[in-house]
Image (cartoon, rainbow, N blue to C red; front, top):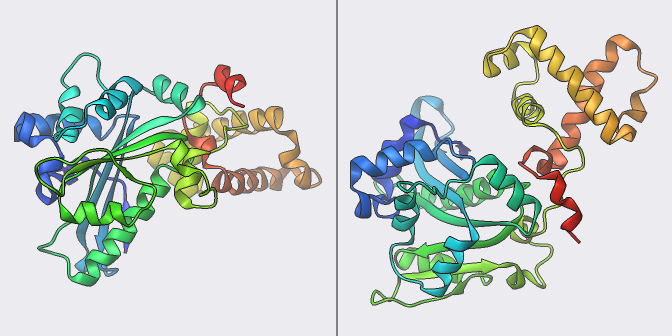
Length: 311
């Protein structure tokens, strides 16, 4: 089973599979849909669509996942007064002037300081389309998608509203989650993981998100955009189509990127110093992309001025 990032045309699927987690109950279908269209492109939003069946002709959307970064004030208020409707309040907040959908500078500042607060908005599958085997695969694929989509970000805490017995069973299987409340419905509650809960779990997949290293290359947003696209589309021809730039503009971006890397981490290219000039460019790309695959934090927003505050 595969996953991909959501597109605006997937919104109907999100609202159909698990509408009660997406703010419709508080805002109405039309308003919730408008907010979610905005969220899909927000810097603080991460989402996933899982695809059942390897055969493209028979492929179907089996499940959805979504999360959003929120500020400390919102997260701490929820912990002080846990009550049903967390997701509805997150979505409703997008109607206010002080939107919770982080700007890139805000994401960068928190990601470079003590970490980001993550609210898990959705992680569900379509019971009408999924067999028992499909559900098991979708659950595992959504967990993989969450980890990959957030790879390179530093977490401070994760908040999730448990909506029913299925959610409660899932949270119980993850010993790091602490249940902060029990509401009249015995299955509904707020579950949270914070940094101190990770003590003794340093080797776990989840723990890596709470202790992600800071970047070393200090790439600009345009550098990050180029590298992110190049991970899947390594040729200049494919990059021109994806980024909407000319070949000459792509080449200039690579040239600027090489200079930046040589300035920040000159040792990266030491092994290819003797490669002839014609072959040095492709070799540099190969070296940078290999490094980026191991260090996804280089592709995330950061605030360089704050790095001195990290022990």
